[in-house]
Length: 249
Length: 78
Image (cartoon, rainbow over all chains, first blue to last red; front, side, top):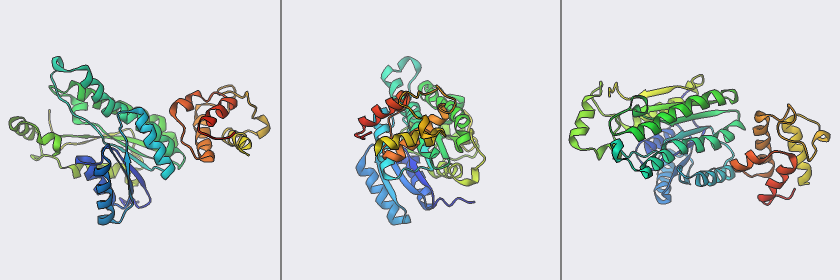
């Protein structure tokens, strides 16, 4: 029982860049067969090719939009034709669109929840069906520290990520009998395209709030996801693992 | 024959003899066809006919006859 995933089929949503890409690389290094989701076929094809060259693993592009129920359905139907098997689902795809509550448009609310929350539910729905037929699996949902403790200007994002925790804990109970584990990761301040766009003053303020004194790397989240995906966490379900370096908000 | 495959899938999933699988057999009408067995049945039908069913179709599959109607939407002769 270790972190070797050579016999595991793993789907990662939002795998093209940032945390998702780091996860794809970490899981490839562990030998997993990968199904990488995103919306841009060219980016995914390049990543799949790179992972095959670097790690010798089989990696397949799964182009669908997690925020669209029909698109998710088509994506999983294609996956079914390809493999009929899924051991691990990482619900990583997400959007961040901060605004003070008086400035939030209905479109922002709908798009944020469609991607961050509804997408997680749709993917869990289909993934659980695939996992059930092979005796179980592991679902890892990427929430956020903001979904646990909230933050100024992040009511919508925080709400969407808090909902992910509710989905995780409920599904953990519902799917335990089928040997499907469901856990969440709550990342803190992580070095991605999204956080690099913050104004310098805000960036520094957030850095100061981290007990370990450094911004998190995407690989920090990828390592936590690997643990929850692997058999090392075979008796862990319904948990929210904070990966935030001791960040206080 | 596809028709036999549907009956066989129901019998296997619900743990009943094929003779008990009638067209009017309905979801929830017998203790063997509860929500848990329903998902086992769906997996069996998907494996037999090599198709992944829509969530709406899973919800709508309320009888053996309805199952055949739904499967026909996927170009399955049954």
